[in-house]
Amino acid sequence: MPNVPVFTCPTDEWLPLDVHDPHGPRQTAQSVADRGGRRAKRYAKDLLPELLELWESAQPRRIGPYAVHVPHQRPKGRLDVPTVYSEWHRAPHGGPTMDAVIASVSESTKDASRPGRDITTVQLPAGPACRVYYELIVHYNPRLTAHAAFLTYYLLPENGVAPLLALHASWNAATATPGLQQAVDHIAATLTLQPRTPDLLYGQSRPAAEPL
Image (cartoon, rainbow, N blue to C red; front, side, top):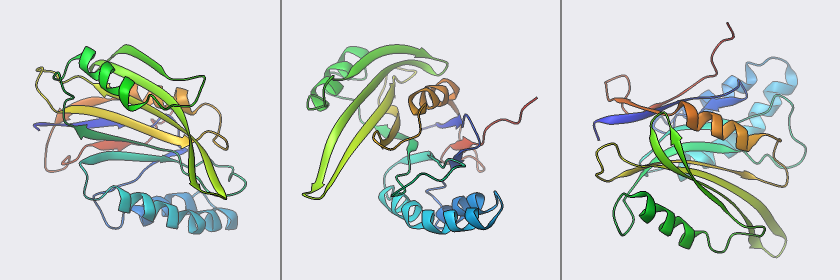
């Protein structure tokens, strides 16, 4: 793949997680600790196991860039970390066309919780894409159930040749901070494909832009 994905985080509550560096989780946790104060240090310490688990789950898939949402105000209860990342996928049966992508995601998300899915086509700066939002009730065990939300953009390839680039986001719909859908939509609107360079091997999730 000659080009790599780059996107910009919408606020400073979204932090890059380098899934290609073994030190990536600790670097992200340090960014939380650097917010200042004893509570921030405790927040970062409690967050690190979640970041390590996310880093581990990203290996050895073709993932990146990757970012996590860490609110300034620590959520109550378990730390469920919303994520957004890009990943390359093989084209569905029928090829890398919009109709084939819609058919594929319609089938794969048919068990989504009601009121159901939202599948639309959008035009991003990086090109035409299929936007898919859905929710699932996930039963991990008799005592642990999660209400998970998923938002994915499938970007059609520029030259009509596979693979497809997907921007995946997920979070706990029951406990998440309001506005995550809008935040991911913002990230998708900044998504670009840039030439691979020695300093940009896997893409980049850039911090929120400084205010003018």
